[in-house]
Figure (tube, rainbow, N blue to C red):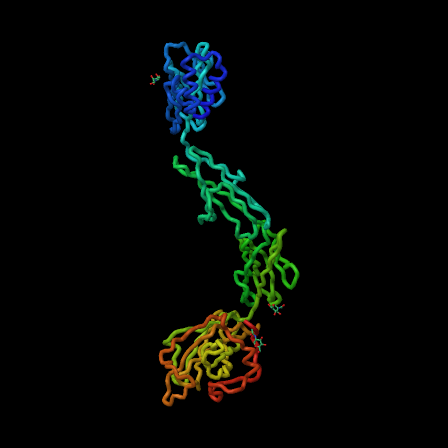
Length: 497
Ligand SMILES: *[C@@H]1O[C@H](CO)[C@@H](O)[C@H](O)[C@H]1NC(C)=O
Ligand SMILES: *[C@@H]1O[C@H](CO)[C@@H](O)[C@H](O)[C@H]1NC(C)=O
Ligand SMILES: *[C@@H]1O[C@H](CO)[C@@H](O)[C@H](O)[C@H]1NC(C)=O
């Protein structure tokens, strides 16, 4: 409207010398009321902004008061002349009509019809031309153009990610974002996102949604990939096998952008593959498969993934030693008496189990660590080893039952088992906690009631230091040494676990 007023004022000034009385009075009003009255005094129609939808029809008026005067009307879209009432040869654009009463009709609107439309009235001299400006806003549903246009961006770690969604539509849509399906907490409805690719986990699928209340929201995805060193893990790092069997080492490539070069190593040298030892890659799992294991295959292996940004290793052990044994917890079978307890365990081994070591000690719970908390003298909480003979079965599953005797009544014990076959010793099992029944003369060092003490398997991560047991072996113990088979010789150090 202000543009329209300007036109009116300019027009008056250029024709100042020829102004008649009526227009002079109008000019006064223009100066006092910012001009709208002047234009309105000539135009019967008022400037309009038409908000409508695609495929609608719109009629823009151009009516003036003084209908006796012979006038000529031109219509403009922006600066472009659309039609001229005196020039029938000037062809109107499609879907556009200029009516006898000078109104302009546009049918079957499209988003492109959104514009300002000016009606110019040319009157006989001495009057100059006057203009009235209308606008059409074709309400259109949002359309998105992504930055980058193909919706795919790859950057190196440390570089900047710059993505965006330019949304068009009428009215102007607002943009919201999700990353990997989660809403992003952005302060404003920004259409551009910039950040430093400091970590590969900042990568993902960024989805923008543009909404303006017209039609359905528009969405677009931008996949951002951040290049970094690979990340690998072992599906299983300790692989139990035996000569003549099929065995497979499997590494998982957790992250690989750009695609890494992958190699299997044995003692620092790339593994030579052939008919018997071959590689299989399925999705992100890389396997080294031994069709028939030979004794010389046993050992340490490394899988390495390497790209321009770094490398990652993961270690494997192909071994014939038994898997970690597991205690069976079954109250019907784990018979407890006041001085004895029956333990049951199972172990996987493709070769005979030569022997088991059952480690046992009274359980006092975890010692308090607070300096001023109430503690009794810490007990010499020592492991005692019982050698249990193996079996002659071929396996692969071996089970063993052993009844420990000579225990103290009403006492909680903890137990660990290790197994040995011709390849060596397994790693220690999880810890089993169990309690003996109350006896006739209760001489338990602990006064709790262990009548209903549950049999508990403890997390192996908490396992105890067997090395330490060896060092301090022999000082006092709550377990009756005479009653338990204790081997002082051949005390095998299992190592840390
Ligand atoms: C102008 O003409 C169009 C088309 O005939 C009509 O629809 C419209 O009502 C007319 N306007 C006036 C004010 O008569
Ligand atoms: C395999 O690796 C372990 C450490 O993980 C090491 O103690 C052992 O000596 C290695 N074995 C061989 C054959 O290199
Ligand atoms: C186990 O105990 C030994 C002997 O006290 C000690 O040298 C070793 O560091 C301990 N290991 C762990 C994992 O605590």
